[in-house]
Every structure is written in C-alpha cells, then in structure tokens.
Amino acid sequence: MTPETEHAFQAIKREYGADSLSRVERMLEPGGGAARHPLQRGAKWILPGISPTPWHDPKGHPELVPVVEAFEAAHPVIKEELTAAWAERRDAFSDYEHYLTRQEDWQALYLYRGGGLVAESADTVPTAYKVLEEFAVGTEKICPLLECHFSTLLPQAAIAPHCDLWNFSINLHLAVDIPGGCSITVAGETRSWEEGRCLLFDYSFEHEARNSGNQPRTCLLVDLWHPETTVPERLALTVLITEIRRLMGDL
Image 1 (cartoon, one colour):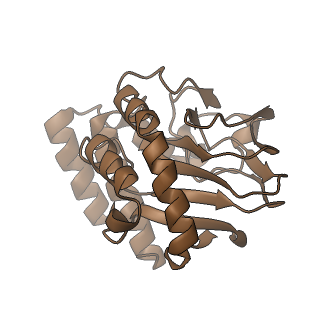
Image 2 (cartoon, rainbow, N blue to C red):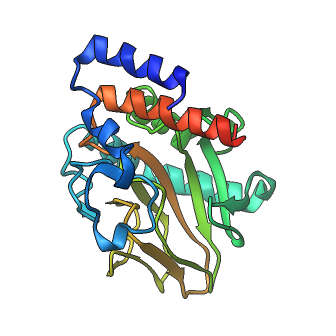
C-alpha cells in the first residue's frame, strides 16, 4: 500500500476499531487471504468472509429492499422513458466499455459513472435517475467505484463468459425491456429476466448473457455494495481501489 492508503486505513481503524479492516488486510496478503470458488478464478480480488453465493434473492437483504422495490415500482415509467430515449436520443447511448472488452452490439446509457451521477441523464431518463439518486446514491448503497447504466444488448448479441474484478460489490438488474430469447448464466445456472422485476447476483462468479431474439434487450444495471460488507470496509476499499487506479493511470 502507498503511504496515502496506509494513512487512510489508520484513520478508519481509529474511528471504527483496530479489527475493522481485518478482512481487507487479509485480502491484500499474498494469495488473497482465503480460498476462492473455482468459478471466481478470474476475479482479481476476493474479500474473505463474503458468502460464495452466485445468485441472491433481490429482496433477501434488508438494506437493499428499498432500492429493489423503488425500481420495480417505477418500471412502467422507466420503460416508457427508455423507449423514447432509444428512439429519439440515440446519441446518448455508446458502445459499452467493459474492463475486458468493448462491444458495438452492447449499448449503454450511463446514469452514474466515475464516482458521481451523470447529470445529462437527468433529462433523458428522469425517473430512473431520480430513483437512483434517492434510493442508491443518497443512501450510499451504490458502490462509487463502479456505475449504473441502461444495458442494451442488440439482437443476436452475446456477452462472453467472464468474471468481474471483485466480490465486494453486487450487481442488480432491473429488467426493463425483455423480448423472447434472452437469458443470463451465472456460475453455470441459467435464468431469464422477468420484465419489471430485479435479479441480483455476485458477478465475481463467471457469468454470460445472450439475446437470441430479434429485438433489443435492456436492463438497468446498478453496482451496489455487497450487503455483507461493513461501512469501514467500504471506506477502505474505496480508498484502496481509487489509489490503485490513480497509480495505473486510470483516473
């Protein structure tokens, strides 16, 4: 760790207790501090003590229930505004840039990115923006290291199997517009989206998605803190990953 990271960690431990960052410090040890599931082998960081559970009940974690319920309740208006944006403001969408790849047949409209809300989206998709701001950003449930975006997978497009970087955030999908022939596989288990409902999964496990239909598939993706992480861990992980990205020239 850099001196800046060490200083930040010490400040957090003074406030929350000497053992408050023990799992984060174990994660940084050679070998990652804990064994990992074989289907998480592609992830870079595995925080010890997080349940190795690929699929989660979207309403199974009390702190996330308000986020899930708010998005599901707003779905009809969110879909209406997304459909209008896709038809009339296509320039607001861009090729999705995953850390592993960039795909022209995978389009994104960002609501949150680079640690903050994307103000331009407030006019384009106002309802989703408002729900995100009130229930995820304002409550600090969103992981500021990542993002929220509408993810549109074009007909016959597929996302190849991959693991995301870590297990200390979790991916919420609101199924906005789901044609036939669409599915997602996480850790070998395939499910389909139900329009207007959420899916929740740990994307440190290998996962893939496909649209075998003839219409675009759109979900709203929200990167939330894993509910098994603590407040001091979230503070430390934000400092740590931000500093790593700074050193790597990613900021």
